[in-house]
Image 1 (cartoon, one colour):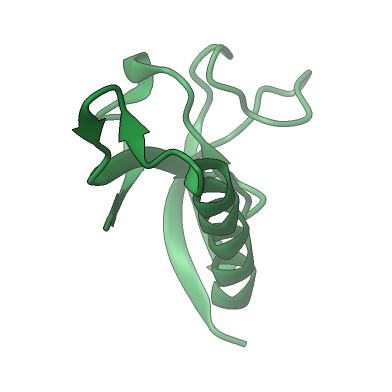
Image 2 (cartoon, helix red, strand yellow):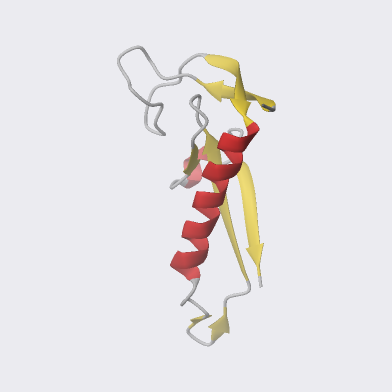
Length: 98
């Protein structure tokens, strides 16, 4: 099995999962299985594609590109970042173009 070393923010002891509104936790390298990352990233991308499938126009404008940011969790999950405050904190930027 192949692994990818990823620097992640660890959840606090009283948290199940690190969230965007959680206080900063410890940072550590984790060896995340590449297959797990592939599957989780694929789920996020499919969800984005499905969500945007009917959004072709915004008023008189045609939607050409969508940019989102995701974060890899300590457990190997891939989560969509829903706030601009997180930008620049190690997020992965995905750009979908027509």
